[in-house]
Image 1 (spheres, rainbow, N blue to C red):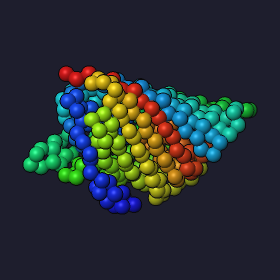
Image 2: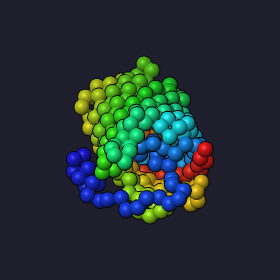
Image 3: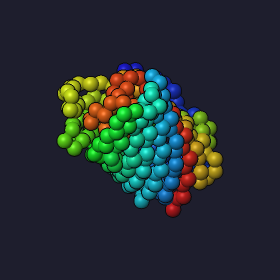
Image 4: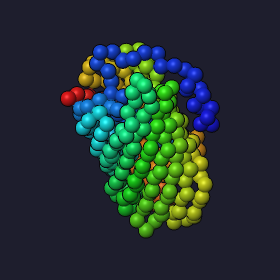
Length: 288
């Protein structure tokens, strides 16, 4: 599936470069992996996410601060909150989370050799998860998730990522997750940018009810960015997960890692049901 996606992406050339004030090559959402250098400076973004799956609803907010210390070294911190509602309006699950990460561009592209390589780490530290039904409430201790990625960019503009994540829930369960993905940006004009991306996650999971090995979860991702001014842009993206949500799943990790606790209720369908969600993000960037 990834080979077919790579062939499709490589067959469609990027159409244009950005204007005199280029956008940072890195999308504000870390879901879009990238091995190229980013713009130096500070970015602040705010996003809203919404999704539905078999009568259940999912909402999330995220605020992120990214600092490009140099064009090769970047760090970020983000705060998220998640709210899931079950088929019954009284079935709910909510949690606050924060994440932090860093990336290093080990090999930057040049005119003679337009390939690149970047190393990335991201940690998620959710707080207590709160589950409610019509006749009970429960609180779950926060999980710990550490993820690592190696991203390679080839001369055709394709980005490939190999990732590994380890998730643990206190006295409840753990998971090891491997991922492989391919993506590409298309500059549609001096203001519009498109990202198409596909990933496959394979995970071994041990939770309070069972152990499951070799689960495979594909994830399809698309995003579009529009430059409003030299210092502001808006991004909109969409994600589709046809086999449910991986335990470590990009921007949903602060919530999906609680599946190790098997809280049931509003979150139960996340494990296996097809789900799609979209988000919109406003980004402010100041170069230095």
